[in-house]
Image 1 (spheres, rainbow, N blue to C red):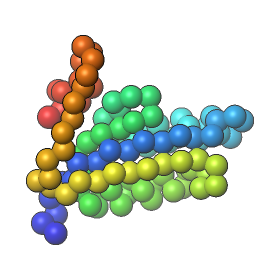
Image 2: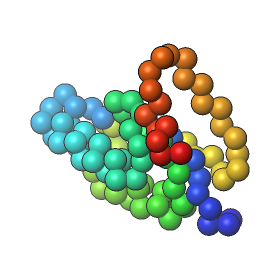
Image 3: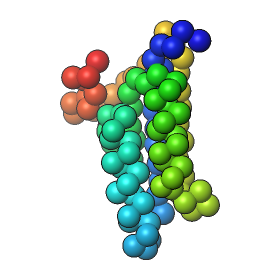
Image 4: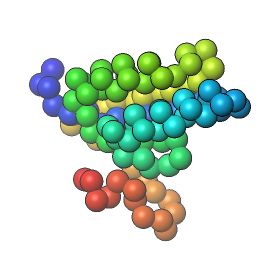
Length: 98
């Protein structure tokens, strides 16, 4: 563990059928935006240290309903190449962050 950054991809599906769910959705969105770049409605990407990943998880755990919401975080160790292949003619949301 070098303390280097890891590539992080986070996706969520928040149950927003009621007012509580809609509040959670806004909080989850704001929390993710603090740490990562939004690439789609509920998909975020970026490079974080292990410490920041831990903080992100803690913050999200305070917000989500663990029985009704879904959050998945993929982490790739520093140096691991991940192929990103955008197959449309739309701008890469994280292009100006790399």
